Image (cartoon, rainbow, N blue to C red; front, side, top):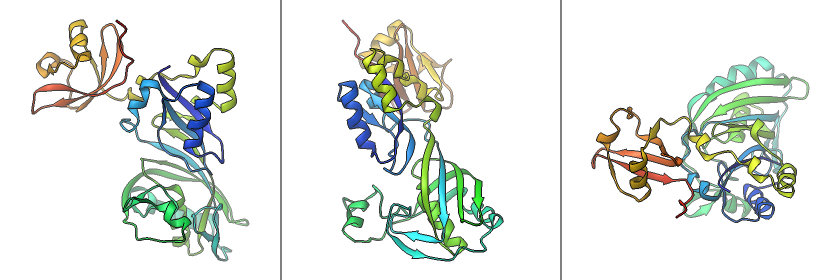
Length: 303
């Protein structure tokens, strides 16, 4: 089995918990995930199976989409409703229009300070480990990108609302909500988070643990697999002939002159062999004038 299983992660599970659960269902250990989700969050978690695990960390599409629920009037240590409430403020009078007016400040390239309860490492220590010890350390702001934020609901009586967010990698949604609360002067906590898209894979392609278990019991696990090449569909294709495919698989460097008609201005390509199909990704090495293997994502060829 090689490919991607898109899991609809249930609330309360860590990303590592998901891997552990799937190892029991699939009866295999070679699994990896892309795009960690907090235990509170639900939704899209791509799990890479078999040789596809080599693709973790090199996906060309890092876009993500979320639906986030929030409540104004509170500040917590985790920036969400699962943490200890540190402050409570009266949010009476905050209107939907005021929330709308504040949102453009979080669109585009923005600077964001990672929350203490996060997996970011500082001097070799995870921030959440320090936070659990009651420690707070200085964190450097990082630049992240947010494509859009839409307020889809807001109740001026309960001070609760929902945002739809499209963004790049590394964005902490609860930090956006915390910072929104600071701008509004009343604080805010995230009360729910569902990831609806990750790496080009939408929530509609996700399966639950129960659905995976059923497929396993019926001997139809292959139906759960998304071909690994699907997440590299945005890359330009480079198609090798049979001779080039044999050389490529054996690690022989291929000169760029062989691909003049196929090359574009891109530096990274999805490589397809003849007759093998998708082989993996390669990059252009202009210094050595050759095609350099980035990741071989196919199973070894049977002799």
